[in-house]
Image (tube, rainbow, N blue to C red; front, side, top):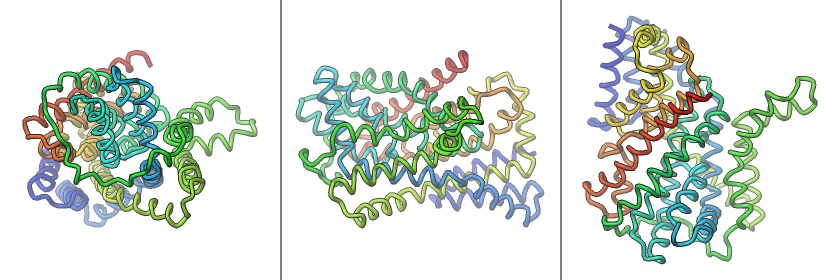
Length: 438
């Protein structure tokens, strides 16, 4: 019965989000209440579980996602993202431009959320393709594949950060493993697959471009642009291992432990960006603060989705459903990482949202982490890979790509949807191979 209730709940969630088009947060709360009451929980217990789930899920994630949004906005609005792109295009040359754009997309995609990154890089892609007389989609796909991988795999992006928090996975280690798995996924889904799209015509609608134009002579310097964009990666991957290697008697231990906290690393990165990409370049603090406020407004709907998923997770746990599902799954011969990927992929295809797919899957696979020997960081990546599977008409990203490039639905499926599928499958293969060596 608990398994049937959970299945009905997930199908109801899919129905409310996809067909009724009800707000995702409200849908999560309604489904959570329904599963809780149907499972025999009292009304106060349901309310307590929802409150605990929302609070426990958001926690310091609000800080990580919020600071990540701020950093992305400053990198974009200052022109640092464009500087990074220009440098890599010049470095790789015309012959290897697809590889240069893939690298640029990955670097830009680490601090920028996907939609913001998309809007930033599409005009750059169009400019590069037009100036070099190259087929547009063959140039665009490498950069967008890199953005998608960063969105699905890597903290501080909302879904992987939230999944890592739910599974008690190390953010720094998840980021390190994620970069390792991301490289082959980007190579195959980006430059290699992109070369097969030369015969699909595309002409972006310039009216959709809405980005603060910064003249080339006023762009931030190359060094500071790369440094600020990559600072979260540097801090998260450097101080995490250092914290565990220092002896407890070391005077540096407290400072290193503080900087190893993901939200502190993100805060330091934002403060550096405020000065280096804002104040030092002549902006007033009022103007910089306005950019930060806009970033928070843009990310607030994502935080509500994460909060709703946290409520569902807690209901499934408190009702005993989590333990029941765990006992059933523990007897399956399917490897846990493959199972996590498969569940996320199924929900992604049904719902369309990678974030919803990732966060809903956590509720189901959490008992596996507790019952079996599974590296939580690899499970984060397996779920992240599955959550990118075959984007189609129920995914806003599908329509964003279609409308910007003026494609038919068939052309969008042949390019965008296939690219997302490749990213998902190669990500799974990378996770399974990494599982053999760690």
